[in-house]
Figure 1 (cartoon, rainbow, N blue to C red):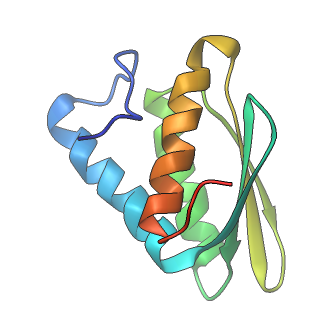
Figure 2 (figure 1 turned 90 degrees about the vertical axis):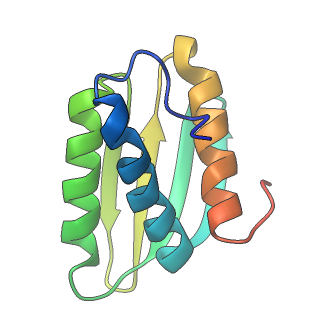
Length: 111
């Protein structure tokens, strides 16, 4: 099911599939690349467009509220948005699972 949602997440269980679906939709519609500069950092490259930056900002703000171990940094550009996702060492497996889920939703293999 939602392998990247850890037990430490404070989002109510009933709402977790909805949040995962929001991320899946974002990845399916907008993800054009991923990279792992190091084991605790994931870079996601998304296509830009009208309202995309605001949507991403709102989504990661809500995710930070329930999963405080994530640090999201948004780097908007005119045609692309880079989203950096950083975790602490205790949550490396969560980042691995998020990376795999993002790649799968976008129809890509994990590099």
